Image 1 (cartoon, rainbow, N blue to C red):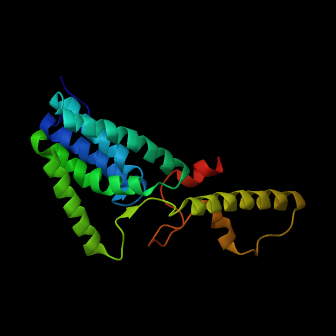
Image 2: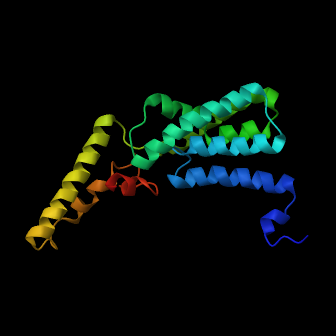
Image 3: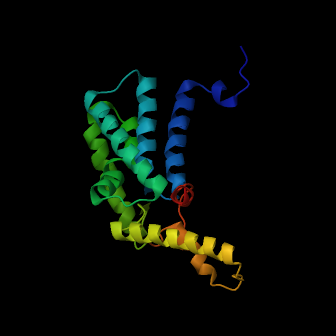
Length: 205
């Protein structure tokens, strides 16, 4: 039977790794950096795909997967609304559920699962040191106050826009920087004040 899709025509042992890598890369692309608030969930999805293909995983790996789904769901919510995430999430995301961590857990036998996490954690430390001062991660606002300030700035900007529309003043010469307040806090070390695909849109909703 002929398949019209090239992907379905590939052997499973090629298609499966490509699918898992694609999921991991998608997580990095969402917030445009190696580790972010969305990569935990996409990593858990990639590991779940591996579990289905392999017919199951060792219990500790399954527990790692379940915890990743819970933490990842929280991270996805924080990503969507561009909310602040606490330090425990940042540490878990970068050292335990980074794309490299999940990749090694999938690649290596289940019995060396702890070793995979140790190797990935060490590699991530080396990556951070080699890229310094550039940070290979982005977790949104650096504090709850920064998030609240960004939301307040968005509300004020929208209110000012509505008032300006009703009274009809000429605002063409206003400082264009005021229109970017709703994009949220500027990412650490970045040049843009808007990150990711959804945060500004969802905040305006």
